[in-house]
Image (tube, rainbow, N blue to C red):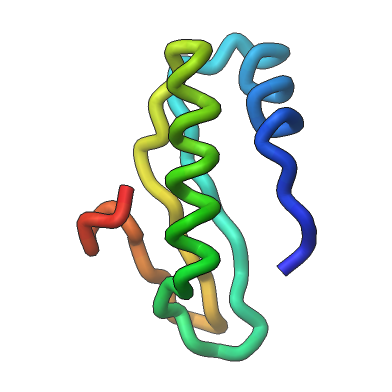
Length: 76
């Protein structure tokens, strides 16, 4: 996974006057299950967004034709 900087996500949310975010990234491995790093990143982004009153609704992982919702797994 490339680097994701919470400050950049927050900056973009502010520039777009967002009230909520849907996070999405791909797993080239073909396995859509969230890793521990995905879980940590989601919680970090959720905390950063909360500072500006923006909700993270879900974090989707795409692996080929499979899509996994972290919210459905209780990880958001």
